[in-house]
Image (cartoon, rainbow, N blue to C red):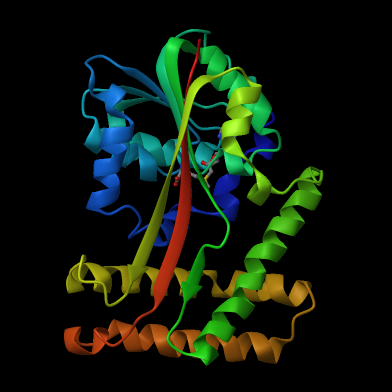
Length: 299
Ligand SMILES: C[S@@+](CC[C@H](N)C(=O)[O-])C[C@H]1O[C@@H](n2cnc3c(N)ncnc32)[C@H](O)[C@@H]1O
């Protein structure tokens, strides 16, 4: 395996995933997962999760389907260490990419991936491998993002500051692609997942959608949980500030604009750190995220 190629954690580290997915999938979503993936309720089901990262979806799987035997395939060694310490002997770990996995054919009842196929250079090769490692009548599940996900902030000034600093993420992806040399033309937002499933010969294909809408004033989550998240988010922004600044400067952005954007963002974050429960009811920052869940079966 070419170890230098699998370093997703440098683009999106453990704490970034934690902060980014903190309020994703409420109780309604989890009930739907139990319905859509009801085949995981049977005893002794062997499941392979592909691209487990820091274990965000691994944790959901283990909580919803406590009988499954779970193997996590994760090529990034930093994430492998996180998975080991987070889940101990509750999971097995295979440190490989899906495209070249050495896992034996016909060995799992189900494979599942959460926000992985969308990032791969060739989704078809990955799906062929998922299909190879599942048994006959085994299931393949992919969960991927759809476009038009969006964050809304309380004022235009705050929105502009966040949008400006978000450029750093795009620059980082562009620089990373240049280094890795995988600049082939592809647009994951055009991916039509059921068609990929058909192309690799899967049957009984179904698709479902889920939209997570989280508003800071949301009554589904209690105040202390939101405060915990404000602190994590603030700490992460502070930790990343110097690197983001270097990245933006390297890509031609003006220092004054960067500093001004950070002033606005930190004023807002600091206000949230000390806000009262009553005042928080008036803050409607909103995050909207779309997911498509595709399920297929091997003949
Ligand atoms: C966006 S993260 C998602 C992590 C986790 N599933 C989650 O939802 O938080 C993408 C994950 O896919 C992994 N990944 C990237 N390329 C891969 C490949 N070729 N085979 C398997 N996993 C891969 C990355 O290391 C990373 O853990």
